Length: 199
Picture (tube, rainbow, N blue to C red):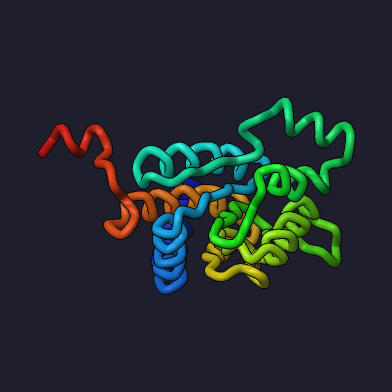
């Protein structure tokens, strides 16, 4: 079997095993957040940060959310990292954004953070603060889901189809899930351009 065949077979296996109920729980929570006037904050690092930026665009444009990602402002991100350290950048940004009950934090991450092993402590501190203020926590993560899955209200854990390819599959399926969400009839408010022109 070629690498291409193997990778696509793994992707098909993940599709078959994705937790549909968890996705629908995220839909319900996000619909409730928007209906109550809550805001949506995306947190991710590395490839997940790029996914967060793309997701902000889609949720704002297609679904009418007020949505943001701290990694979209490199000046603030690097200033906070330089002055205060990487582990506090997200929590301090959320505090500056006045995160409150009624808002939602959407985590895109491979590991989801691990307090005990001090992995992605920036996510851990941010989620502890989100819990403290009563914000909703949702996410799409990989592996066992780590800290995010443990504290989240609804979290999709991308099934492991290959121990050697957890990261690429997780980051790819973050995009699959959020595109499912922004095209979900309970969330989408505006048609995408190409689809609207073919009707």
